[in-house]
Image (cartoon, rainbow, N blue to C red; front, side, top):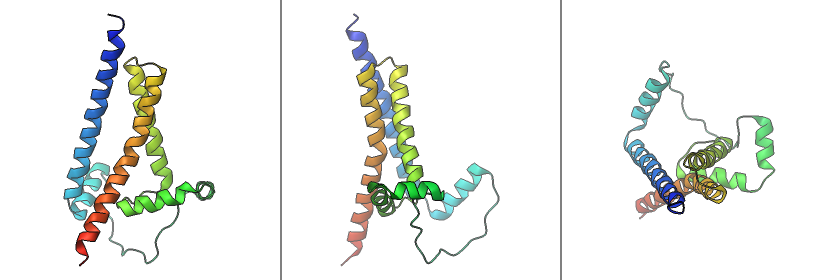
Length: 156
């Protein structure tokens, strides 16, 4: 009986993770189908702020990795972060790299915390954190691939 309890807890944890990722995937697809005006309205409704004045998009691409200059300088010192910025833009995500890194760390922490709450041991928590860390990266890779395919379909 004692050996089956960790197995049951691990399987339950994996099922909860699968359901959470499925719900996130469904939310992602629902948000893809609405227009930008609907997205703005939804965000205004969620934030309960007044409608902003429309501004024309800038002519220059914002290449900053972070809004904070010190963090931007720190992120530029490491080679992968400018590449991550390019991947986010190619996927259609207009996120700064520092926010994406926070999302990665949050997903890994949430997965490890969920594993700990289910009583999973040390290696299981580490595996859960790795799954949580990998999920946003796979989401960006999936969105990037879909956007590239849509772009290629428009070419003659």
